[in-house]
Length: 121
Image 1 (cartoon, rainbow, N blue to C red):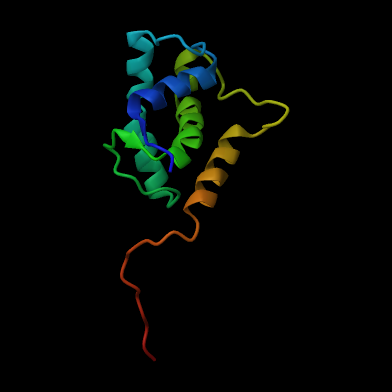
Image 2 (image 1 turned 120 degrees about the vertical axis):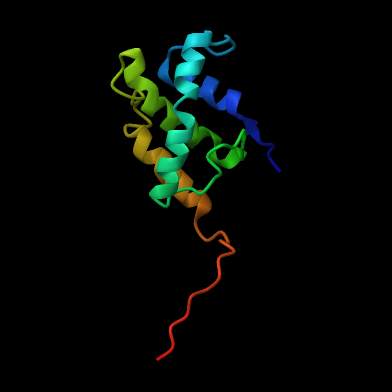
């Protein structure tokens, strides 16, 4: 079982994905606060789009969602750093779309624990 990752880890990983921060460095307070301010909005948007349902005040994230969430958070924060989005690569030409697909694959067929709605004839 993989352990959960913290909100601080998520923001730091997003900064690394943007290329603003090198691995092993600590983020500047201003950069950290700017990206951290985008977390609630991202989680609320993912919930409204029925992609992921997490409490949008959560401070820990399941490991299976961590990397895709970091990519989406980085993409949301990119304009604040003068970037058009998360840089594409040869192996990942559409990082945002691939992150959403990865979240959907992980959550597909998980129990929702919602009551089943039935319709009688």
